[in-house]
Image (cartoon, rainbow, N blue to C red; front, side):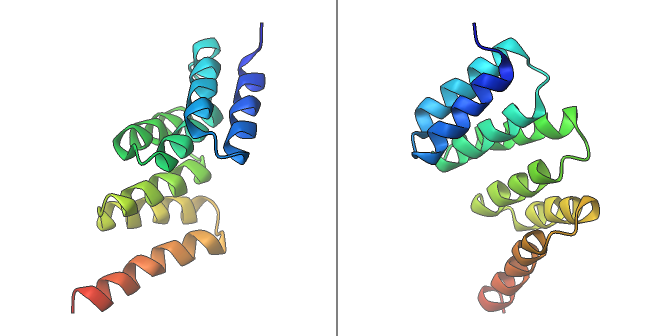
Length: 123
């Protein structure tokens, strides 16, 4: 029987080959073994996002954050999904949370891209 970490790694390997539906199932298996595994929740959210299942992805990121409040990658990924959903204000809030934890230039870039988008299309 595989442990949660092994199922999570299997999901990651499936994502590399763009097998997102299968990856979702692997992450769900990881969470059956350990429902309090924030990395598996985050990775599940990423795979669901790739499948454009944004509401489910959002819920997965929220769970990852609830389990690990300083999980900057989950805050960032939550922001990306919110951006895809057109919830720009909430996306900025998520990016701000990610930046407060880790000042990754990618996080800043995504936040600034929303400001630019709003300036270009809402003038």
